[in-house]
Amino acid sequence: MNIHRIAISTGGGDAPGLNAVIRAATLAALQRGWEIFGIRDGYNGLLVPEQYPQGWLVPLTRNEVRGITHLGGTIIGTTNQNDPMRFPVRDADGTIHEVDRTDELVEAFHTHGLDALISVGGDGSLTIANALSKKGLRVVGVPKTIDNDLDQTVATFGFETAVAFATECLDRLHTTAESHHRVIVVEMMGRYAGWIALESGISGSADVILIPEIPYDLQKVAEKIREREKFGSKFAIVVVAEGAKPVGGEITVHSRPAGRLERLGGVGQKVADELRVLTGKETRLVVLGHLLRGGSPTASDRQLALRFGAAAVRALAEGKHGVMVALDPPRVKYVPLDKATHRIKTVPLDSDIILTARDIGVCFGD
Image (cartoon, one colour):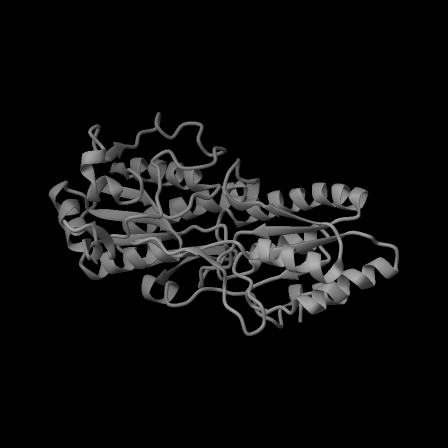
């Protein structure tokens, strides 16, 4: 079947580089004589159309995407709510149950004459894309996450920007920590993978880095802080990934909203409180949170996002679907969505970056 009209959606948390993907996909589609539309706020435009009186499809033209490569966020909106595979519905008695609305999505695509979908997202969004593909929709996925935890691709856009900003924050925190002889605990995003915390922690000269892949013992962390004090360093920077957990303990979950992934958060406060008791030192907590998602993408993230957006359109033009574009330097390749979403990419414990951190004296709490 020939392609004439395609749509693009951006789902899950935002990431620097989303607009670059939209621009590249739009220009590549228009160059082939196709029409391209953006779906508002993930799939919300389709699932809750009453919230969009202006329409759920945004026609993407050259004018619409002019000058957006450097902008953070996404011009078509995104959401990490209302998963169409587990859409929350409130009953008359106030209870909430979840229903699968993916058939409605596929029908809506056909009703509006859309021939294919480019789905830009992380593991959650691409799992939805895979389900839509299995129901007959032509789908190409684009890997997006600041967490860098998608398997089958060397990198995801947004990650380098997040690491660069987190490193800048650590540089600033060093001066105030040293001036006040404090322990500063810095909690970072990353969900179940420690890539952001690890790479920014090493780049920003953190003394302790706690990641999900290595359960921590705070007694070991306290020993590291006391050891530093013996050598005249009366401060410490402790980086904590939001998915870090103690030995024998569980990940700290902030909430589990219906129709959404569980929300992590709070481990930084626990670590700060316990270190205050264990070391007797003044301790402060900084949660970078959504600061890591915002702002202008780095040059590298812009280029990767543009490559992914153009490659997604090329894949459709070549008759490919049910695939995700993936970085395999120096090329972008295509991998089945099934394979791309079956597991997350965590930090290998024998990786050179872990070995380097240990060689320069970083404590992982083990």
